[in-house]
Image (spheres, rainbow, N blue to C red):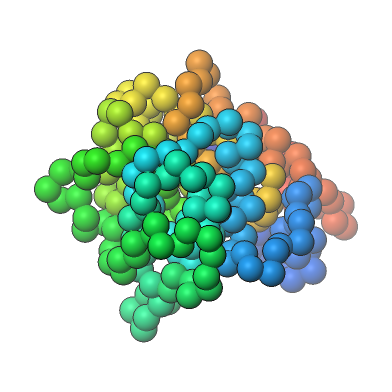
Length: 255
């Protein structure tokens, strides 16, 4: 069994044993943070900026945004890529049945009129096949849970049904991958690579050290999916490696 596929359980078990003080210290260890602009609707704005700067991608045309939440990604895209024609955004939104989810922001921003928001469950959108006419697909979904298996199962279902089924051979993409250690998720990402010929993982410098999220972007890469993930997670863990009372809080690498 691959070490990487068992790491989520180990990582979550360690996190659940931390004191509040230890958790808070670890959360921001090695994280590049900056003061948000007053009009930024979420941290997603600066996180997408960081991924785009690392990957060098240029966005244009028609965009599909899945699990957009408050709209930080849409705000960044509208303000920084005039070549975007429109963004069709889908999200659960806030309701009694969608605890932990937020509605799309009502704050104004430049070119917000390019965004069309629909509240729905993205897992149900592609039963009749993938969408057509989109140049880019964005995905910022996935919720952290205390139980590692529940978190992994929920994310895989969302990713497999709501995201991977929307991919076609010619589309470009930026996907948040909450659980890149899960073998099912790795296989789904490999399926995307096989279909599109592209797929490279990036670690956002603004991502907190108390999660394993990486970002999967449509740029070429000659390294295997698992090697990419292992390299980035080892680097991420080294940011937060520390000890307390002679016990390891976070291991500094995956064996």
